[in-house]
Image 1 (cartoon, rainbow, N blue to C red):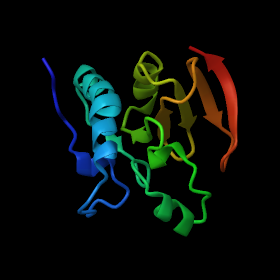
Image 2 (image 1 turned 180 degrees about the vertical axis):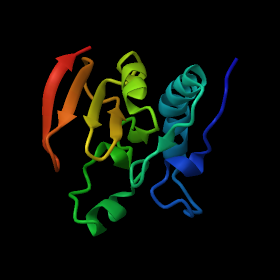
Image 3 (image 1 turned 30 degrees about the vertical axis):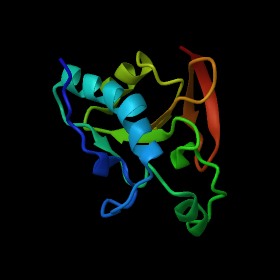
Image 4 (image 1 turned 135 degrees about the vertical axis):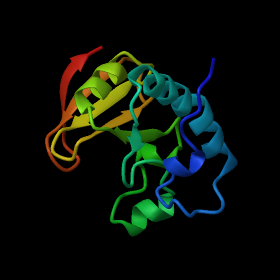
Length: 137
């Protein structure tokens, strides 16, 4: 059985965005919602897509002082950051998921997840854009 706890709108940086590229919606539906819906159901507790952490247009990235090449632009399969009250349990669940890269940001209390790469890697945020590899999953 498939549970759908999340709307597409939750995966958008601009929650009032009225048009979203079809390829972005498709990638959210195919690569992100199945994973996080399953984890949400298993945990039995709310999970949120955190802050500015779902789909970001290249224009939004550049206007925000970024270079526009983030996985959050969904050029590849995309990236999403998640948070919840029990972040340690969420981290454990995400470690076992199909995401290829996860990066835990303990000070901001969220976990970045994407499908980039050919091996499953786990990182720890060292502040800013710096990530430290802490293991292979």
